[in-house]
Length: 47
Image (cartoon, rainbow, N blue to C red; front, side, top):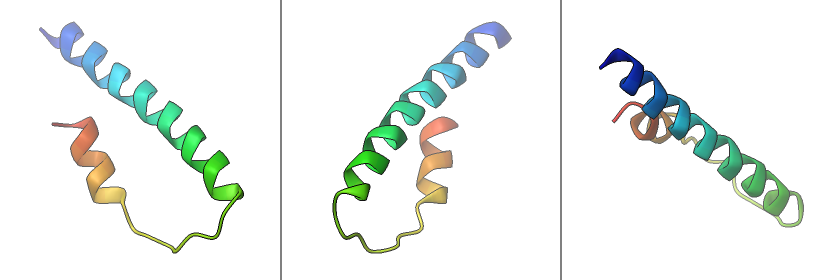
């Protein structure tokens, strides 16, 4: 059970890494407003 939970968390972190890379590329090409999203990120990972 613990190994499954760890694998689920690792998979979510990998998805998050890909999303962040894409978002940074997009943000570098446009003007963006600063936002605080830390809580939402941790909710996504640890749901």
